[in-house]
Amino acid sequence: MAAPGRDDVAGLVEQAREGRPRAVARLISLVEDESPLLREVSAALSPHTGTAHVVGLTGSPGVGKSTTTAALVAALRGRGHRVGVLAVDPTSPFSGGALLGDRIRMSDHATDDGVFIRSMASRGHLGGLSWATPQALRVLDAAGCDVVLLETVGVGQSEVEVSGLADTTLVLLAPGMGDGIQASKAGILEIGDVFVINKADRDGAQSTRRELRSVLGMAERAEGAWKPPIVMTVASRQEGLDDLVEQVDLHREHLRDSGELQLRRRDRLRREIRAIALESVRRRVGDLSGHAELDALAQDVLAGRTDPFSAADRVLSEL
Amino acid sequence: MAAPGRDDVAGLVEQAREGRPRAVARLISLVEDESPLLREVSAALSPHTGTAHVVGLTGSPGVGKSTTTAALVAALRGRGHRVGVLAVDPTSPFSGGALLGDRIRMSDHATDDGVFIRSMASRGHLGGLSWATPQALRVLDAAGCDVVLLETVGVGQSEVEVSGLADTTLVLLAPGMGDGIQASKAGILEIGDVFVINKADRDGAQSTRRELRSVLGMAERAEGAWKPPIVMTVASRQEGLDDLVEQVDLHREHLRDSGELQLRRRDRLRREIRAIALESVRRRVGDLSGHAELDALAQDVLAGRTDPFSAADRVLSEL
Image (cartoon, rainbow over all chains, first blue to last red; front, top):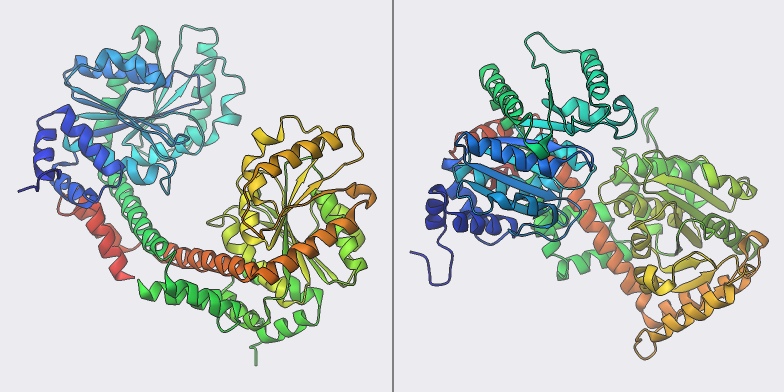
């Protein structure tokens, strides 16, 4: 019953579930652009989510994240999985469905019905990854993806944020990346569920492995806890990918059997709900920018008749 | 009637107005640390604010911001003004009343009753400068400072934020800082009310001035609008400071006579009120972290019974 020119959300969701790429792309655009239909889309997706396993890929620039993502797609497709790829660039204000830059390497898969690839920008979104990315994940999940690969372009805090969105976090390293693992990768080591030493045909791969193994060995783990394995790959030649997929599967089973999967996802949803709530208030407060009431309150503070905190209370009581 | 061990806010404000440094320092700590007394402090300060002229100093590292700040303090003290200095470091999580690093150059003034110097950190505060800094400005204003100098340590976005808090923004340049003014200083040129070419005894000072003058000349200005002057200084030798103080005075008069002062301050307060309102909501949402309700909502989303947006609405309706 959609009005002409208006997106028929229920229809789009139906088509996305059938794996139609245009419907998937359209739904991601609707959530990413924060369309007025965002809520309707989210509600329509909800009953169909919860099956996709989200795999985050993090690592310093140069370790081969994009190549590993492409190789993983190939390996997962080889097993008949439907795969989604979200490449998030926290430093770019631009986004879109097109394959950008490095993404061109993914073009082998661009015509494959079983793969959905999307580049997203997260700059400009309050909370970076925390807001738009989960909505896009939800679309790919509802579209029947067995696995969604979440890759950040660039560096920084987003690496840790990825692990907050992923069921399984892959931490990629490469031999000869300079400074020792212990010093530079402190935060990264804690979030890795599976470690990947890519470019394993290069000098120093074995010593990087030894060093990593020794650092990981020092971590205290509870009885029955997951011990992050180290996988050696040469993603550019598709080497080691079967092993990697197997370790991801093992981790997935561990999460499911231990009940940790539900806990992780509940934590993720709690953060997501809070982020949405905050963003919603932020907008309502932002809408007051040109509001006469806010002007009057500012004037009252200027005149010493009230203080900014009491004025803020008044603003909030108006919402 | 303060309980033992509790800060007597009214008493502190009274002492601050008399110019007692310890009371000023204590009040800034109370607002900066977001003490439970924050609101009480803000309310008590309100009737006594609005007289200080806030002068922001921005510029790339190496132009001599700290030296110019110190020289300005000396010049303003020479005219009998009571002066406050807020040095905000947006990259540091540490703050305090102590003179830190570069601030040591200010030690000439450290024993001077008419000068209050404070280093603040803004990292960790939501909105960077937008939250804690205005509260500290308010304390120095109520303490009877005729002028408050607001200097950011470091670089980046905070330079523009400074102008949002200041009545008069000084943009500092120095000769031979590399790339041309036009290319690198686009955003900075728009916020400058007075331009200072410091280290004016160095080679290239005159060409920097010519270049700046030509760029400023291209800007379109309304009839009667302020034309930002260029002042040449050698702050380390106290040269050009009289001229600088005079230009600041002229700008202050212009702001007052044109009515722009009230407009700027009202805009500032509107932003401040909104920042406080948002922070207040952020906390209340944050307080729900371990809340059973949020857990239950996340569980409902997990089970597909609701979606994150409806859940967020529920969270907000609980507040």
